[in-house]
Image (cartoon, rainbow, N blue to C red; front, side, top):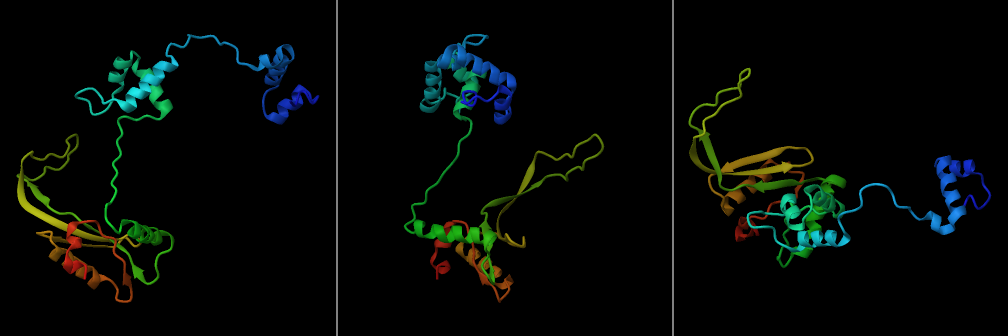
Length: 238
């Protein structure tokens, strides 16, 4: 359209940020063949071997069919054999359509009756800690890990030496289990931690009292706990 307005090829090239040769070539093709001259012409090279129907079949098989027995997902080798293509062709098609059979994401939806009303409160606390922390408040994230095995090696670990890595025995000794509790202030990085032999509501209550005793008395406490069943007992909901 710029050439039709009478501008020179050099001026059009400068205005559009393209080469003078590109302007000359496409303007010449339009003058010679009008709109037909703007259609891409056949290019040299190997003709296309994979049809649209084959691509559609591969995508449909990837999405809708289970992988072969023994495979957790569709590998490129198995898909290539099933569709009669090369592994590189399968990889290119998967990349073009954003398909990643080797990746699985988990999700969970709560069925709690108060889930919808609790979400704004929980998300608000998490976001508020970083964007607008509550005034005169401490917001620790509380985590509990139950039944952690306390293991030890049967022999001392041999330290690393030049050209020799650290070495340890394959055998270990069990020293029972422990349940660590931790409360992290994600703003200051301070940590309150304690271990208990059991994981019941009694231990949870003791740890909460430990947090309360360690927190400055002039600050309010807003706890972000995990979802253990021990939190739903009557003593913890008073």
